[in-house]
Image (cartoon, rainbow, N blue to C red):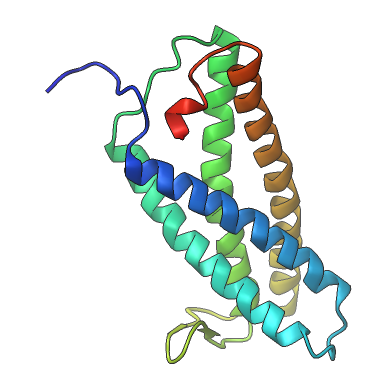
Length: 177
């Protein structure tokens, strides 16, 4: 087995990366849409159902992505400046944290009264605890703040990849395509 870094991320890592990115942006958009609806709006319950289901799917994929991140070698960042390498590590680990923290806070909100989260058909995720109203409100605030931060960080992450590709002429973006 070679000690050299792979040229590209594995197919599994690339698929998980892009699937999670799509789920995050769709979920942020759906979450924003939910904030525009009143409680009795006919679309509110179905939109909330899909938001929760997407969040739980994103959590599952994020856990798999984190495991893959721990188990697989990743391409080197040798072509970037030292400060960019540090920024990339900070960004990646922050996004990994966010990919776990946002759905977990959403889970806490959704199960705060002790009710399971219905997904599809007979599949549901049980509540493991209940929260006092103050705890549920805190989880809502954390969820909202982390979601907006993640959207901004993901845009910055994508912008950095495009900068490396088009301006610096590095293979950084190609490693994830």
